[in-house]
Image (cartoon, rainbow, N blue to C red):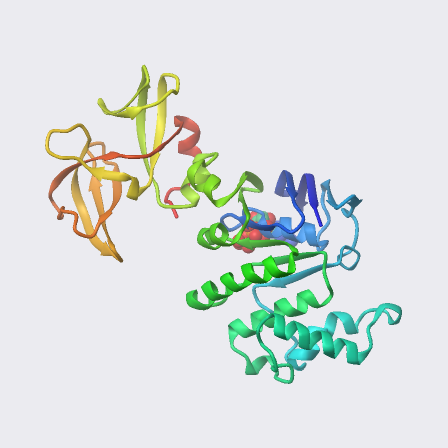
Length: 354
Ligand SMILES: Nc1ncnc2c1ncn2[C@@H]1O[C@H](COP(=O)(O)OP(=O)(O)OP(=O)(O)O)[C@@H](O)[C@H]1O
């Protein structure tokens, strides 16, 4: 089922939670809505679900205008972070719930609902657990039951709001992989909300990065990472250093030191660089000089922070065996970077990177 969102806006008591959002979701796609708290992800998801109605704009499901249709009419399945399974119902009854409350004319027989619940339990890899109660399951198992319940109504679209948010990191990673496999098998159009960039970039076909009720960029993991459309996107999907630089005749200079070349026009810019895209330069070679103010080990790398003469701080991620202790003077230069407009990037970028 294709979903087409056009010029969607949503106001709550005069507060604009979404501004002019347009987005095309292709049938069978797995889409992540990624952004910081308050960026409008859940509002967009709830509008697609039919749990809220837009202040302006339209939502089409295929050829049909769904903007004012109810959740039932849209036939969407959804799962929220706090998988509210019915505690007093067995797992099988939870899964069959959506079918058992259908009007008599479209309601399957009890035997059919049982059969379907058992089938879905196999699909979510919990065969034989139908007679258990939610309290007798682990968090990850409950979340899979919640997904089975959402799938039971044979939804046209599956909407997931931070579905793995409440789980520990390892279970989260396992469920992520499992959800991707399930998606590939069932082919549902799926939209999920997350504020975790790893989850979004790893799981989704395309990621929609949101900030302050607007879409900043829509793209594959590679697009978002390698071709960020704005300083916000660059900073949100990883750690970043921001240096004030000057472009003159194709050269990028930081306090008079040429760091590299660009085809950009002359003028001030902000140079955005990832900690692992900086390298140490040997004595005398041009680079950004500074004094090491922090050095620590992180997994297989060394994280080093230097203080620059203009009171800036630069974070570097170097191989574990790299030299540099607190108090040493070193110089670095970027291997890869992104240049953005100076003024806009200052106002727009979050203070710290991801
Ligand atoms: N029912 C409501 N009434 C008033 N304001 C609301 C309502 N729902 C959301 N908002 C506001 O709209 C903005 C967007 O909220 P939304 O829940 O969509 O953000 P989000 O990106 O999903 O954030 P989070 O990651 O924290 O869930 C927020 O500023 C929020 O306070």
